[in-house]
Length: 232
Image 1 (cartoon, rainbow, N blue to C red):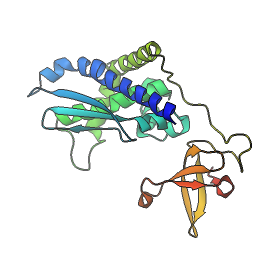
Image 2: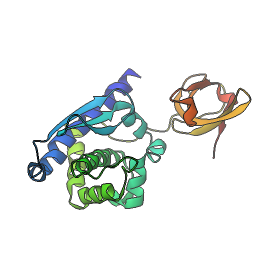
Image 3: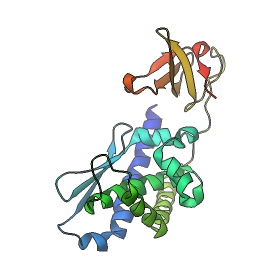
């Protein structure tokens, strides 16, 4: 787990660097034409949350959660993220979800929120709106997204970081019950009712399942495999 966390933190730092050295620099002429002196701060988050926010009028903060990177390293889970769906539905990077493309698009997605905010195109309850996708489409059409992708690939090679989906994981030999994979959707019974969730960790004799029902928050259940049922 420690090695996984360290690797994902390193990748998240690459996303910070790409945002600062590629997207911010690419947009510098436009930024300098806007009122005020804009500043960018990027950070690696402790959890899964990945987001854009402001700190004051002209200070912009991008946070890339290392657990977001961990989740997107699983190909099945990656396709459920909004950024994964955008690649397919809008044809970014040819509509092909690879981990480098997904990470590059994550940078572009968050940076599009930054531009959207400066332009005043964010309203309460209206974030991923037409104006947002106008900006995001422009980032891809202009070639900036390809520059981000190239930067990530080059830096990953230089720092010996592998940017590839993890192989599907199953229960170790001798484990009890059927095999389950990280990212797989399963169901089980809890207090007389059904619970559906996503496999987030496969242990030797149990499986950690994060429920999808919002009322259960971000907790997870540790369930014996024999009590789990795969959801098709």
